[in-house]
Each structure stands twice: as C-alpha cells, then as structure tokens.
Length: 445
Picture 1 (cartoon, helix red, strand yellow):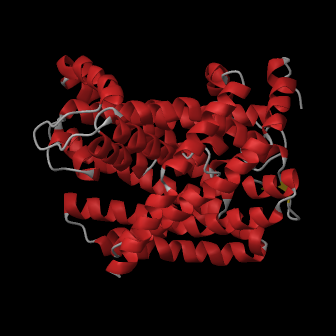
Picture 2 (picture 1 turned 60 degrees about the vertical axis):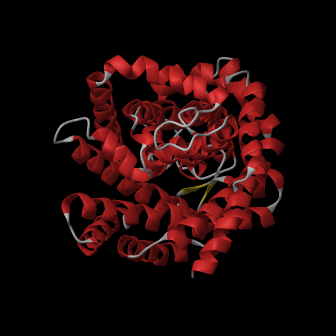
C-alpha cells in the first residue's frame, strides 16, 4: 500500500505540475483579456445572484444554483488548503491564491455560459448540462465528453465525498472525543435525507446553509483580526513582499522562495475555487435564467466569494497569527490561529468546517450523478445516490491518503477537457457576452 501511495503521489506531482498550472492560469488571463476584464461587472453579478424569482426555464433559481456551486466549492480548501499553501510557499502564497480568484472569475463566467447555452432537457423535463454536453454539442467531441464524465464520477467520490467526511470526523474526534463511527453515521443519514430528493432538495438546503456558514466563518475571522489589529498591516505587507521576494527562515519555518509561493498559491487557489475544473458548470446548467450570460455572471460570483473573500480572510488570519512558523500544518494550523478567540474560537472553526464539509458533499453529489447520468442514463442515478451515502460513512472511519491522492489526480485531469472547450469556444463566449451584456440586452430572453 505504501508503494502504491508513493506511485500515486509521483503521478499527482506530474499532473499538478507547472504545465497544468500554466494552462489553468493562462486560460484565466486569456479569457480575462478576450472578455475585456469581465470582473468589472462583479457588482451587477452579485445583484442578479441575490434574486430568487424564476427567470426562465430551469430546475432551480439562479441563487439556488449559485449556493449549490458554492456549497461544493467552499470546503476544506478554504481552511486546510490555505494553511498548507502558506506552510509550503510562505506568506506570499496568499497573494497568488487571491490572484487566481480575481482572474479565475473570467473562467468561471465562461464555463457557466457554455453550460447553459449547450444544455439539454431530459425526457422527464429536467435540465442537464456541463462540460460533457459542451464537448459533445459544441465541439462534436463525444469521446472527450465521455472521458470528462468518467473522471468526474470517480473524482466526486474522492475529493467531494470521502476525504471531506474524513476531515470532519477526525476534527470532531480530536476536539470533542466523539467516535468517528458516530460522526459517520450522522453525516451519512443527513446526506441521505437531502440527496434522495434530488437537485431541488439539495438546492433548498444549500440556500439556507451556505450564507449562514460563510457569514459565521467570516465573522470569526474578523473578530480575530480585530483582536490582533496592531499587527495586521505588517502581516499584509509581509504577504505582498513575500509574493515577489520569497521568505527567509524564521523560527521553525524552513523558508520558501518566489517559485514556491507562486506554485502553491496558484495550485491551492485553483483547488479551492475550481475555476476551470468544469465542476460548477454542471449545476449552473440547471438554473432558471433568461439567457446564458445572466447565469454566467451569477456563477462568476462564486469564485469571488470563495477565493477573493473567504480564502483571503483565512490567509491574513493565519499569517497574522505567526503559527505557521511552528511545526503545524493543515486544519491544526488554522485551529491554532482561531484559538485567539478565547474558549469559542476552535468551536467556531469546527462548526465552520462541519458545515463546509456537509455542503461540499451535497454539491458534489449532484456533479457526480449528472456525470453518471450522461454515461449510463437516468436509471443509474438512484444506485449512485445509495453508493454516495455509503461512501460518506466509509470515508468517516478509514484512512484516506491513497483515496485523496487518487482523487487529486483525477481532479486535475478533469480540467484538461474543460479547458479545451473553453479555449476552442471562446468566440462563442465573446459573441454571447456582446449580444446580451455589452449591447445592453441583459434582460432579454
């Protein structure tokens, strides 16, 4: 098993090496340029996203689609991913992570636009879309669509299910002494109650859960920064300085160069906001929207909230705590930083991680079932949901190093077919944007 794990780690290092990072970040920059810095419309996008009225054909509201996508996106990457980026790449990694969010807005916008434009209505009247349909209907590349769907259905069980359940069961056990078996059973039961009802049930839960969990977590971050306000300006200056000069040895911290800051900042940022990976467009295709551009704007706010806001706050809190100079990593590092809030700080973090993890499991369940529907038809959805609930329990009680690494590999490979469609169909994205947004027809159907 150790040999297999070592082999998978080497493969993961190759998959998530510089070629993929350059392709992903390069696509962010390319689409930002072609769309004339679409990020300037983020205010309008947020305003549209807050509407819950039915705008057009679709299964769920635009707000429901956004919160479901955010549910899958805001997870351990915002807590564990930020801390590991800082430990491996130094404080400067926070700035590079933030930049992936700023420029990734254009990519999230583009993939959502294509998902709505090329979506289909199934025989039972539900919407189906995402990169697999874009590849098949937009580029006539069904073989690549099948590869994407297969990778998504496998990745979902790892990165969107078992590793999420494992992270929260371990933290609850470490914090409160509750058995991982109990956490696993409760988490599996709650997951079953929600996902058996399908996307509308998932959407309703996410609409209530996501705003609560994000606001509660951000309030905790703000309280910590207020408590330590005297050192915040110095920490922000350190983040910017380290991003371009690297960081020297400090205490127990081994030091990191500019290359490490860029690599780990971009990699963890992409892992967190998923812009370009092709997952979020699957739920964007289910949204009730007048035209593709309106939903594309709504979807783009997901990257804004996830990375530009939540990850940024987490990064500043951790850097400002200086706990990263000690021998801590992952959730333990963030937990130590939250200990600045007397008595309730670790509890706030645990509650935040619990809601983040549960919502991620719900969001990814929909991604996985739509991928399996594309491959095997509607008859495969219910068995997939049952397997999903079982996997939640198993993930809570077993060690998952191999599962995590394998999921990391398939998650990276998912991005390649999606990026192919984004680059090859960028003229369609620009044309639709001009028709509805630049020419002032945003309310047209």
